[in-house]
Amino acid sequence: MAGMEDPVGRRRPLFCPMTTLLVSPGPLIGRVHVPADKSITHRALLFGAIAEGVSRVRNYLDGGDCRATLSVVRQLGVLVEEPAPGEWRIHGRGLWGLCEPEVVLDCVNSGTTARLLAGLLAGQRFHSVITGSAQLRRRPMARVVEPLRQMGADIAGRQDGRLLPLSVRGRPLHGIEFAMPVASAQVKSCLLLAGLYADGLTVVREPGPARDHTERMLTAMGAPIVRRGSTLISEAPTTPLQPLDLTVPGDFSSAAFLLAAGACVPGSRVTVAEVGVNPTRRGLLDALIAMGAEVALDNWGESGGEPTGDLHVQPAPLRAITLEGDTIVTLIDELPVFAVIATQAHGVTVVRDAAELRVKETDRIATTVEELRKLGARIEATADGFIIEGPTPLRGARVHSHGDHRLAMTLAVAGLMAEGVTAIEEAECIADSFPGFEQVLLRLGARVETTG
Ligand code: S3P
Image: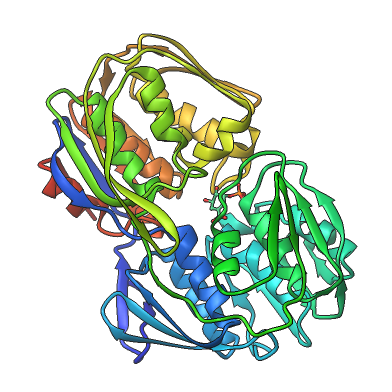
């Protein structure tokens, strides 16, 4: 049984190895919550680690990727307690209080952990080594290593630092001006973190509106980060970073799977409550509205400095749209499930400018097309996206997750609208971001089960 240690050393199972998820067609009906936001949970741990004092984080995400960040932060000498279920107390050690890790820092499958960590560690006074699973060791690191080297970082790694493992010899950094070639919150966050340790200003220009959780959270902690249009400027703080006190909202990227099913499966009526609806994250909602979906957002609130709301959806006739340009980064993680929605829309849907999909947990252009075709979708890959014809009735088949959590859940959504049974192999990866996915579907009346 795979698992990790909790704060008092008990082993907690995370998933059963090699699980097949069986999905039969049927509507989703009811009101649910989804697990907490993954991006914000990672940041709460990493930023809480360098705060001066104890951060309180409620409703954190207990998923595989965030467990990797938790373990890394502990290896850096940070005490993280769980005084109550779902709540952390992170005993921050201040900007300069992290300890040289005795072991290699294993980010498992989490790209966010690896890339943010590179920025956090480059300016420290110690040496560290960052690695990850076979899946993560295939993903590009040059996008953070190159600008960090321009800042004076001493980083060595496989293929001259293009791939993990990376060896980071902490040393003094200096600010740079960097125009990001692609809109990436991970690259932006890495450089803003390194900027906290650099001499002078670190200026990062964004080509598109990548998720802004880092800026929101670090600013709330008192870090001197300012935004001017699409430019962010950070510098070394002159006062300690204040600890965080936040409740993590539900993850829009997890809610997206329920929204997609609710919009497409006849007879559905779904409410997902208290979801983060940060404008840099909710591109799928805008896409659904443009397609004619019956979606609504109400019960606005605020959680951890982020806007939240309840999302309601039910099926309506959908029309094809084109997604491109600046929109793409606002729904980059939702594009596989968007492809399923597009199979049910009238006309030809086009997604372009999304070549970033090729360097996610899998090449999500290739894997989405390969697996959705097995279900009868009329979908074609292009260099930077897909072309999908609809509406197309889907039929159940045996499909494969490729070890990619978002692909596995995309296929489950397709299974809810496909005739017959859809069997998703290696579905255990779902726990990387959405532990309890099957239970949430069951609560909404879906016919799903797992087999070993
Ligand atoms: C994330 C940023 C995005 C996203 C990933 C989480 C983050 O990656 O795809 O799932 O938390 O910063 P990129 O920065 O590579 O676009």
